[in-house]
Length: 517
Image (tube, rainbow, N blue to C red; front, side, top):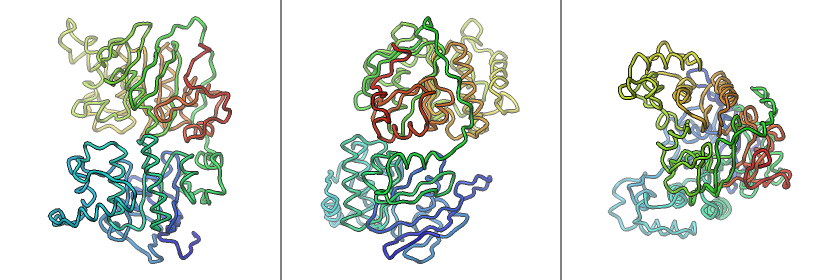
């Protein structure tokens, strides 16, 4: 049972969540949140943080345990009940309406009658003064920066009169100066206004600097609760990672032949406000892992390589030839992208497996390179199903009817019959089961063995260690370190991504240069 004192505002005892399909998300979590303190909540992807936050916000109901508010047992069924009690949640995807003004957003949950009252502006000005941050009340949120939108969400929470504010990764997408504004606001809310703050973050340096205490979740359980002053980043990283069994044996370290040709080269590839300049070369058969946390610039790097970033500068070369700033040119040159959002960006949901599979290379299934032949498309899709072990009764199945893992295999499979030389895989195993993960990671190795270059982004650093030859670590759009995969650990990668400059500073690199180049 969690120890409490008079300052405890909310207490969780053995809170559990089992979904109808049998998935166990929380196995009995104890947590005590005190007034006037910033309580950090940490854990790896899949540890249970998101589920716990949804329970606290009223989006999910717990299936076991008890929640206490001011020492009284409570139970709620809707987010509205939670807000009325005094809990406000600022979700990772900033909950604001872009077509409304700052003023309208801040008081969005109130009755519409307030809009005709001049008191609303006075209340907003009072909020600005309390927090020490000012915005134009009439500015459309759509015209604000990400950091300013985050502040609008904070004003919403404070303006609601909430005593507990849950912040889910509030700085993940912010620039350094915008983060400082959030830090200052969080400290003021806790120390001056005596609010309780539950602060969810992957950034270990900000957790150390900002929080009073931390709880770490792993595999649906709270495995550590400690005062921040008694911890260091190494202990936190060890608790997050735990003594997990590596699901896949690491790829054997291989030294690429000196004569192996350079397939992909970046020359000062950059994007204003997104990416610092990147320059590196990858040889045939090489797998580069990209480690970093949400907002570190991982996906932006992939999009820039794929020539999808119109603002990008610098050069991308495939087999020595510069690629124009066009996704069509990138595909023609042999670059394939499997995006993080497979539903909206990687597949056409209204199409069957066979239509999705043949899209990037219709000339190979067309008569006279003009008219696609369904019979050939079906044959190719059938081959992809067999090769990738896609669980589907036939190629005629809509991709929306597939499980997450099988749908992801289709997004990869559609490139296997193209002239791809470079595979860009952005979170290829996110949200899929362990069996499908193993299949995809084995496929990465197999593709590399044929001489392809693979660049793979993953939040699961264990997976990068399993398949990559080298790993670069990103933060704030920069490469802050490079490691040979066989010379690093998940523990070190967590530390680096979380803000520690390097365990061995002399080993860190500002720009990856593979194989001594």
